[in-house]
Length: 291
Ligand SMILES: [Zn+2]
Image 1 (cartoon, protein in one colour):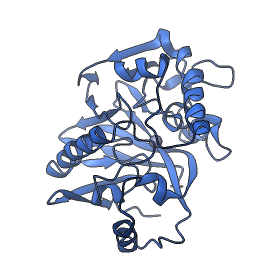
Image 2: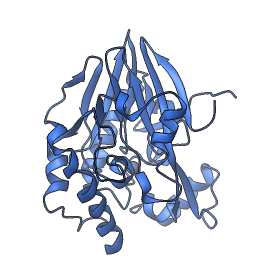
Image 3: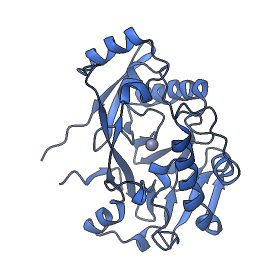
């Protein structure tokens, strides 16, 4: 199996992590851990075998999830589309594994950031998954489709404008095919929405369960594995830092206590692993992949 997709069984559900491509985030120490005290940050980076002086890029995959429940074909997040030359590989990668855009009946958008919704429309400006209903948290939809205020983000104005532009392009074309949810509900049998606000106002995590096996897709509750070790360090693109930290504690605790499989969108591909807890910190154990 190539690194473009990774298939696994979850109970009766066939799941495939599908890579939309990669993006090299520059200055990761500065953008992922904006409130970290300098000395402590250097210490933690060294512990994770990263040289504080030389860590210039973090190459993140954009790991979307395709779930075939037998009844439904559900896609979680649409990747970045043509945002970067290195992204927009979701649909070609789905085709390689025999899935056409028309086959997808449900698309869950966890939040309105470009790397999660950028592949929602095609080049003609129409929904890229023409037979799907789209699901988003209501407050998230309302935030991005009115006048999003990104004043709190610690990034340049040009980046804020780019983020808003992608939302303005990708969201309106799906408004007639949209189901908005405002509480933790079942989206299709076996797949539930989990509130995960903070990174954005209405970010959603997704719990997938079949025959007592469970997967928690935590989207951007954490962006880098160091966030498990230092759950109070937030990123420049986190909308409401205090809420980010609270959501992290809640979902990481749940993932560890229930020992569920976890998918973290930006973690090294296939972005799947388990989480263990030690005090108020957590640790990431990537699944073993062969071949
Ligand atoms: Zn993201």
